[in-house]
Image (cartoon, rainbow, N blue to C red; front, side, top):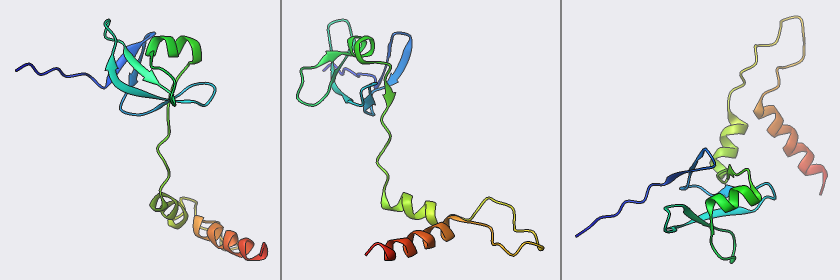
Length: 116
């Protein structure tokens, strides 16, 4: 029994790409690795229902390619809005509070109530 391991990173045009994540070209299209390689060992990439293309061809035609950001979850949003502020505490002579993500969330809630 022969086991073949396909690496999830590949080098194309002198740049190492992590194929475990989608890649985005300059036009905003997402390219996904099909899990296959051609006879030279180059990864085959696909966008939508289009036929698969070599990673080097995608790079030279639609590149440069950047990793696609992961989706933002509800937990990420909640953590950003409730995180403690990194700002220094307000000076005693000023009456204004130091803005924090929590005060920003309160402002958004008040504004949301005005739109209805």
